[in-house]
Image (tube, rainbow, N blue to C red; front, side, top):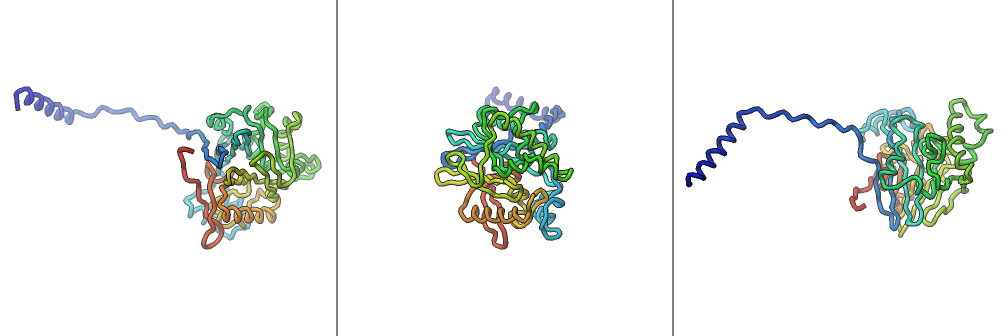
Length: 324
């Protein structure tokens, strides 16, 4: 080793020894962000692009709300899935880009259910779209967490260039002054909210109804599934041999109602009719491998069903793809 190399070695050894003897400088802790990433997720369905959009989550006491379950069944099913009560429940909507039409299915709650919801508009914009681009809005049913986002805080159409479509039986029920007058006091707010929300679209001549199972635009059809509400609709989206069913409130709790579709919920207007509708759609979806878009399954609420060896169905969330 020559003298220069020896000096360099000695100097580096001294620096290492000195650094180990000195206390490390304290690093300031990075602040916690405490916000979630923008809530949207895309998948391709044939030639169509589907974007799941989160409106947020809401905590619900599902052990008290779910009905027709055996004693302890709900709590046990949630515990098996490592879920706690009250259950943090997603509220999801689905945007379908057919290439010629931009169709939004359900609109979230806006300000109707507190500060943890009402995020659909921000997430729609984060996903690269503006509300003015929406051509059509389809509502599965007129409960507040599905139709609240139809209007702005000023009471104007939130989607000013869109037509609004829903089953005629659904519109007739919630827009009926006679049914409002006969409703129990605790149920009247739902009628009033629906009337106020739909009025701007009615006034603009943009509220269009259909009856039962109907093709609305090429590739998107309604499927009549009354029970949860009188005109509840599932929407079928089809392209290039692939099919997605957007279920609305056909199901609320994946950990309970996929294994046992007979379990209903207190929000059903006719639970005896709602359960068979759920069982019918689940059976067909599992048999044919349809994709499902589910409003209240953990975001993004996209997946498929497989028959369970014991009873009911297993929920298989969509495998994540970065393509999409």
